[in-house]
Length: 251
Image (cartoon, rainbow, N blue to C red; front, side, top):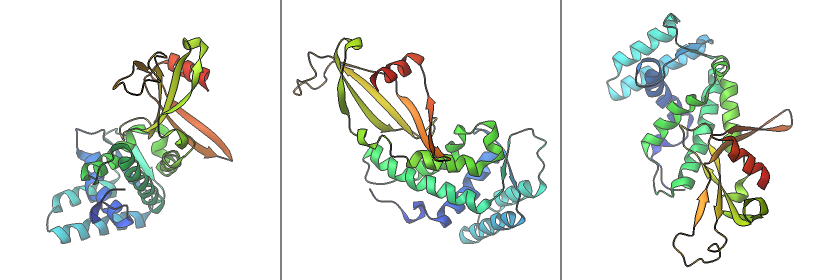
């Protein structure tokens, strides 16, 4: 793990403050992002949002206009703009699950990049772009949506393939060597994990002195694995059906 600023650490305070004062405002009002409405069903949730906004405004002595717009929006419950409505039934679960997802996202960022520090834009991306994975029914139960996202980002089923791993030769593919690697996807992708399959030319595979051995890498297969009622379920985001067929042939 690299270094991370105090304000970017995955604490409850940091996550709630960033989401309420920045992310939520943009998801409601910023037309460069997919917009939706927020419907907090617990009265204490609105009090909590108001507390965070007032504390933030007092601390930095600005953001009063934006804070007022957010509070007006969540208090009015005027959803006549026909945008999707995210219904938050349990605000404490909502923010805790978001915090857990963000905590693992930080770990995977360092795993993916090998960077020495964690940039603030990665936090922004995490909070804004996770909702790109939501389907219409997820807006009625965002806590369950986040619970599933946390389960998938924490899953370790294919961690043994985090480094490129040779798994054998397949006669149906010309007996060329096949390697696989479990990789980290980006926050704007369908899932947090992706599986990469590379087929090497058998005449060059063992020549490790070559800078770039002849190979063909299939488009990645993004996936998520979560457990429900004691059973594991797999979500696949496939670009081409033939890539799934090759994967099934290999495993």
